Length: 261
Picture 1 (cartoon, rainbow, N blue to C red):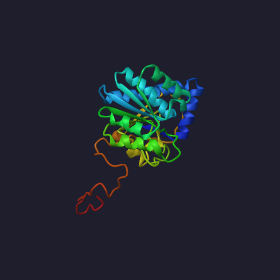
Picture 2: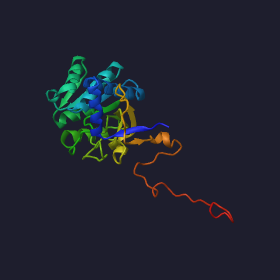
Picture 3: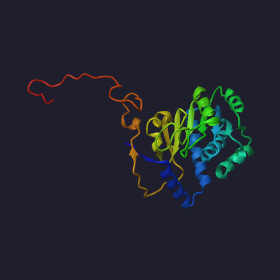
Picture 4: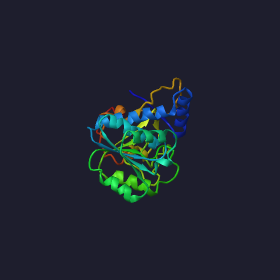
């Protein structure tokens, strides 16, 4: 039976730091994450438009890089960048420049009218949510909250990069508003916020991808068994279900002289 590992966002930072110290450039880790996103989306969808919502941090960088991978696989990648390119730094900025050089359509969104215009074109295809990562520390508001609401209401499958935008990566709490994902593609290990309610419900199916390297000898304090692997014969059940919400069962058992049975 498969047993997966789980870490907090802070612990994940430590793991990424170890990979970088081992000589793996951070931009290569982003590249591997983006390839994992593209593989997950392409496995479950035919060639179609993919609308990629990107924030200004490294989660947005994952989305920008995934647009390039999806385009290489024949998908029609279209990027909505919340903010302007001048606000990006480091690896995210490098991936924006690559997307621009390759002619991938990018709309910089600084007001709600631009967001509405982009969303009106989302008639078919799939969405990649790369707005906010596991480092979220405040309530979601403004254009980010509106973008989350648009993703939730459009009727297209949403694939979240690392964690649904708006979910606290450690506690699973909804930070004002959160994406309801068809699936979440997370990297190296599950984050605790993906396993705790209500984050577990918002995450949809959990897909764990590697980052192109393995940390030998790493001790993990949390392990879990994926539900489908543990109980494949049971019907789906809400993450916050309890014994009173799943029906009742009457059992008539035992016989005279065998009360213990």
